[in-house]
Image 1 (cartoon, rainbow, N blue to C red):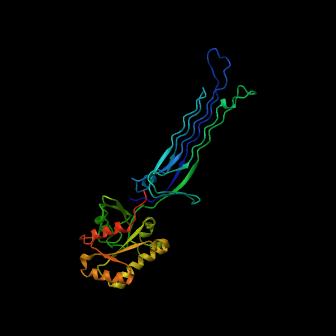
Image 2: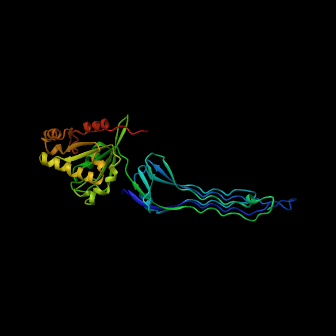
Image 3: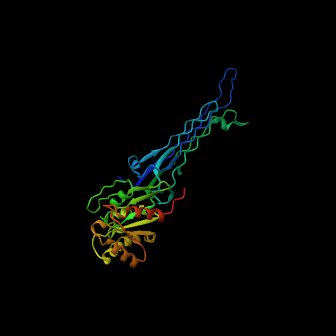
Length: 331
């Protein structure tokens, strides 16, 4: 199951204490101070991992702590620094401070790193305090404590094309046709309970598709399921607006388009302005659908495609159109 929001508590490592020690060797009866510094505590680092697409692994472990630094030792030996704790997160993860809501980073690039908690510095050993007036210092300093933060992580899927539409428009079937994804498909609303990803693969490039659960009127206020996942289309360069064309005239088709676009605008006005490719589905159930698509396109002053996600009619042409419309992401 897709987990796209989670809170975790992270704590960096404490610095090791400085050591109090004096040189003790044969024939050196009054050796000087040689206590070493403590090691530095480990950092907590979030790392964007392209092989993850959910935050579920973090919900199962709500607290994360980096390793403490080791204490200093005699012979002016510095304690070992604590190992950094690297926490993998999906590309597209936004990192917020849970209490204030401040955005710390948007981790979008594979391998991108964010140090959220720096480890505490190690304490000073007594060798640091030797002076001409203090030949045998017995003071040292403790290591600094680690930093603890409560973070809220929010995932926005990184996809090139977001497939949107009313429930039962055939989005999951279309995704399975365009890619190798195998989402759950059934003839009733809300079969898709979470966003599904698929990929159109070509020798020269790939295109990532996201099937977003169906929107209904009032989704922006929390009705239905779509409001939970609208954030996942915010990064898409293009929205594929799939409409059930199996019944209804031009007015009904335009009303279905308007219902979804209204919810997009209410959630985020920028989404309603995102480029859309309108596609009428279920050509297999309605032979006259191409004529309706042409008439609808004339009214909207934009091309409207016509496909059958079930039979595959029009799918190759649709894939080519998507590849032509969506610019390649910068490397």
